[in-house]
Each structure stands twice: as structure tokens, then as C-alpha cells.
Amino acid sequence: MWDPAQYGAFGDERARPFAELLARVDLTAPRRVADLGCGSGEPAAALARRWPDAVIEGLDSSPEMVAAARAHEIPGRLSFAVGDVAAWRPAEPVDLIVSNAVLHWVPGHDDLLVRWATEALAPGGRLAFQVPGNFDAPSHVLLRELCESPRWRDRLGGLARPDPVRDAAGYLDLLTRHGCAVDAWETTYLQVLHGDDPVLEWVKGTALRPVLSALGPAEATEFLDVYGACLRGAYPPTPAGTVFPFRRIFVVAAAREGP
Image 1 (cartoon, one colour):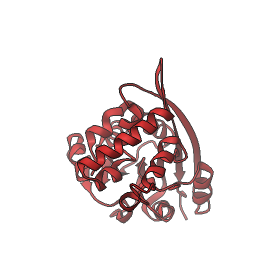
Image 2 (cartoon, helix red, strand yellow; image 1 turned 30 degrees about the vertical axis):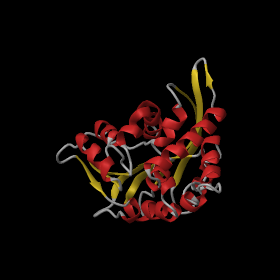
Image 3 (tube, one colour; image 1 turned 180 degrees about the vertical axis):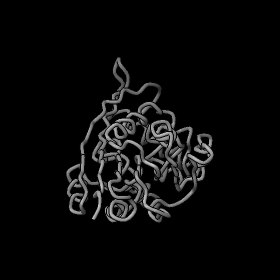
Image 4 (tube, one colour; image 1 turned 60 degrees about the horizontal axis):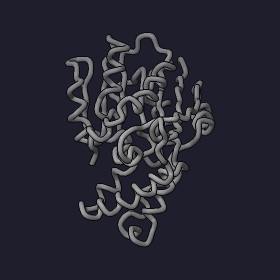
């Protein structure tokens, strides 16, 4: 279960990586665009503003997110549907595939990326995606340790995967081996968060969703109390706010222009 309001609590911080990804997409006038893992629709709305003549399809597995995204729909231009990005196949090749902070949730997404790049893109099309790269950060290490602790192992063991993504060099290697020209880079944002337990509030919108979905209310409260205390120790407040370093991995891959 995804909560659009919780996810959107740090909307500015979550929007910045997508804006920086989109800035490196060097297409003038794509006609068909797919936003795979569209969330609550703000990224797809940004695509519609940049390319007002494009027809954009947003897809997400969360009915809650898609319901929120439909507030951004533009008849005939921008639409949203519930679906599995791993099963998506376009009716005809598209000019741009965007996937924003999604693929770390998709096991085996290397094969998916290759299929998108070689089968779903029109000649000269672009595949643009970004994924979190902070799985060795205290926020995620502490979460894995707690899920694997004796108290929670039977209920939560295996929910927090240790290394679900490649680094930028790994994605560059993967996609260049399949004929793409690849622009890949990494950025670590020093996010300054405010409020009570801001790192806990951040992960409630993302990494904690499988945990909270697996626990009843009383158990969830118990888990959050312990995990929140661990996060406060790992990310103490400063006079400026709570500094939450966040590494992200970016890729823009260009398909061959033709045979």
C-alpha cells in the first residue's frame, strides 16, 4: 500500500532528481512518451509541459498513486493506468521511456532495461531513469538489521533487500553492450530535512512501505519506535536541520538511429 500524501511530504527533494534527469534528455519533439512507475503524476505533468505535442502514458502498480495522478490528466495527451511496469509492452515503439525512482523495486530489472532499450524504443529514442543508490546508508542498513533481528525475522526477514541496483558504471556497461549510447552519472544530495523525526517520515513514504504493509497497527507502532530511535542516533539534528545524504544514480540511454 502506497500513501501519496506521505510520499509527497518531501515533494521538493523528490522532484529535484527527476528535473535533473529530464534536463539531460536531448529530444526536441518526442511524439510518444511512457512514464513507467508514474507515482502520483507530477513527473508526467512535467513531461507534458516540456513537450506539449507529445502523447504521454503513465503506468503504476499502485491504485492509490494512480488515483492521485489522475488529477493531472489531459484528455488526449496525458493519461494514467494501473499496471505492472515489468509486463508493459507498447502498442508501437515510443520515443521516450522515463522511469523515476522505480526500478529498485523490480527484481531482475537488468533484463527489463535491455528489453525496453532494444524492443520498446523507436530508432533514436531515449530511455531515462534514476534510482536510489543509498542502500549502504545508515537508514537502510539499520532497517535491514532490524527486519532480520530475532523479534522481527519471521515477519519481515528478506523484505529489505541489500543491493537491488547497479552503480552508474554498471548500467553504462549493461546498456552500451546492447547498442546504446549512454550518459550515466551519480549525485549525492545533502538533503536538509526539518520537523520531528524527519528521516523516519521520509522512509515512511518509500522503504518502509513493505514493512508497514506487513504489520498490524500495534506491531507497526512498536517497530517504528525502535527504528525511529536508531535513525535519530544516525542522523542527529543540527542547527540547520537534519542532514540526510542521499545518493542517486542517473542514466540516459540513446537507442540506435536505425539498423
